[in-house]
Image (cartoon, rainbow, N blue to C red; front, side, top):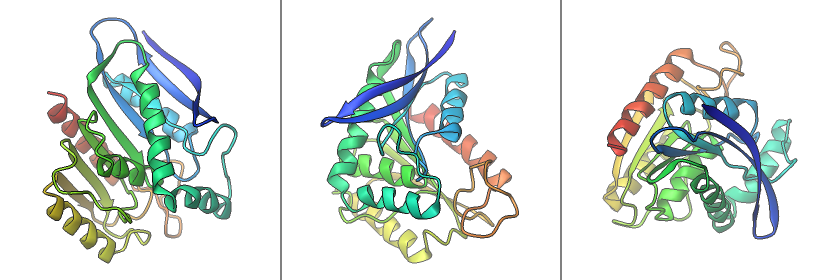
Length: 239
């Protein structure tokens, strides 16, 4: 039976509030860590966690910003995100704290763990790979920011990397994409990069309008295809 709960936890004395969905009956389930967009944990990522549970995974939505910090304007979102984007050691530490909470969920198979992230969250899961979080069998970035000041070192991450990208994303221009490709090549990573035509930033978020102005626009086709790509990826890494 699916269960869910808001989970309060700490990182270096800083209070965070995540969201867990799990099933403690039957065989142990793989665990998937979820990182939200720059608005922080909320309705959208909670629903994604429930969808992951329906697929047979235990899921935990990590809280990077901290309890009660849920920006609503673009300016506030950017300000919160940049606190971590400009301090990658803090970002990586906050990500590890969320990973620790996923490990605590009942009936979770600790040998089969992965992470997914959206936009800002996509950047976070890529940072976890760069941080050589080798307990993660794989990471999936949905329309994530690809740039980093600390590229993946050669042979450091033993898991697999899947980046799902909107080819018309103005937040992640072509030069950033090429730099990411070169980073993955130089690191000899096990990686895959998928571009979706006519897709902009935040193409998976159904809370965004399909006919809105750039940069953030929902694309139903790219959303569906990328979710299928993630499922195929998990079948491979959890086999």
